[in-house]
Length: 116
Image (cartoon, rainbow, N blue to C red; front, side):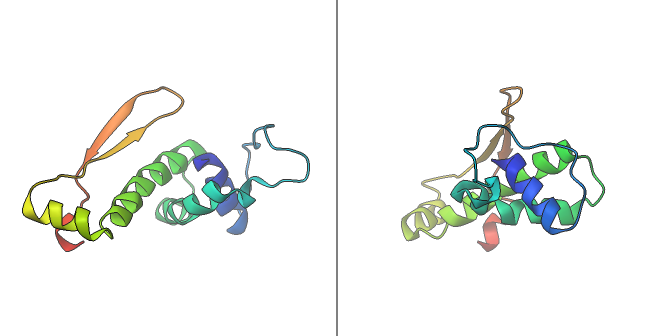
């Protein structure tokens, strides 16, 4: 889904894309219309803006990690989670799984956790 979001962000920005979409979609569907791809688009756009000209795989990697931070920001919208983190009863740690290698990279706490 991250690759699909990056492809959609690249198309919208007018970039040439040399990575074809997977052949898993039914005829007539566009991968950028899928709900999960739509949720990932903001992270994909931010990654593309932060590293214009970077290789597709690198943009995908950064987009996936930016999505981790975005998800943590969403979690902090819950008053219960926010209160538990503020009181020290809970910590929220980000992790990113590279689906190609299966390796998990632990990213730690959100860089701006104190201001969330």
